[in-house]
Amino acid sequence: MLLSDIASRRITPTGVDGYQNEPIRSTKEAHLPKQCFGKSHVPLSPAVRAGDFVYVSGQVPVGSDGLVVKGGIAEQAEQVLQNVKAALALAGCTMDDVVKTTVWLEDARDFGAFNTVYARHFPNDPPARTTVESRLMIDIKIEIEAVAYRPV
Image 1: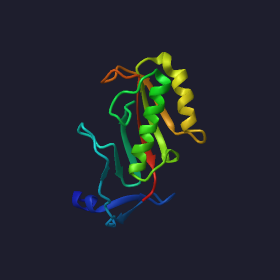
Image 2: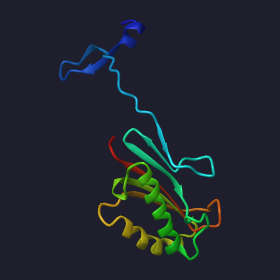
Image 3: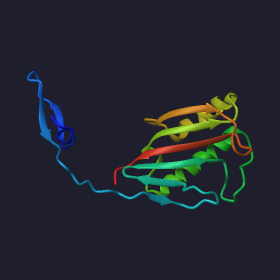
Image 4: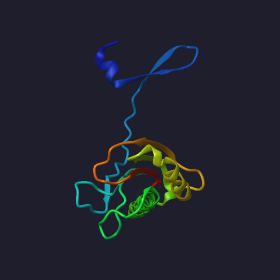
């Protein structure tokens, strides 16, 4: 078989008979453009839809006044999750659509208090989650990003 033949054909299993050559069929799929939602004072979009998935940028505990909320991990976690909810809403999603979150805690000792707040926002069928301890970019206790699935 010539290399040009290999490039234009797919080898597919046929069961006990071995393999059979089958021509590749070109299917033209509809391409859905990336959609960005919301604005930020830094170079990012709060939410981006790519096909059936919505990606929410890391949300921090900043209130509507643009200031970091006062208080400890419980107050900051609550604000962050409210910000996640608001970013999801920009793209037509809810917390029920979230399939994965990534959480950064400034101090692992805050995990219990954070987890209590988090559980209230995902009472049924919570998403997959990764939680790590990390230094954060500003003086905050928590940051959360999310991925949601909502077919278009």
